[in-house]
Length: 301
Image (cartoon, rainbow, N blue to C red; front, side, top):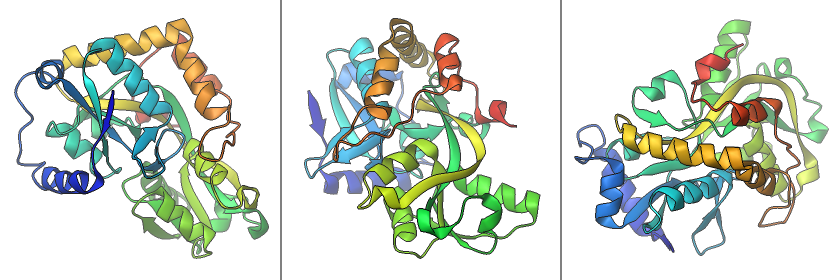
């Protein structure tokens, strides 16, 4: 049974939890014991990251590829637990996992070496390419054309790091404008304040599909990088990682994970019942055949 948390309570809890994240110790015992003792599992979800994790309507119903994978994994390993959903951002997900507020993070989080020092990641369930969305009539099709222009990106995403890395490598300068979430970053492009919006290709496709005028935008340019995306949870909890990874392996081997992928990336999705038309990449097909949890640095060009 789904049991959403009310937004005001979520905001207050997030503020308290994040403020004390560095000082507060994670609860004693493993995550599985914590869930069984409380009778509930708390999922960290995003409000505006379609098709990976997003909110539908005012009823605080959370859906998406990674949300469904989280639900299926938890149903497998703790079938009697109630599921609670907490809206989080790219910035506060890791602190809330570290201090035990969240049992599992279900947003589109990149697995990299720096984050592995703070949390643990499950097997990779998506490989994204960081690219840019532009307006069709802008004439912008390459990263080189962004020099000296306004570029939007979301605070806390690896897209920000990759933009800065490219600035250093090419001696280019971008006027990077940071949005608090992906919808705010897209609004900068939509309103003309930014000339491009840089983010994972799957998230860009989801946002464009739900825009007022989807045909006005396109995803262009070379990829700034490929990123392994995975569910995340507390570090130093091998029993929980083993349980999550084993559940994901079963979904991969049975073909169910590919069905979930098709549902969110190829078939029409709510709220507008439009398709992202993003078939599974060769890289992800290979990961389903040979699962691993390698970090971003293993994907470096």
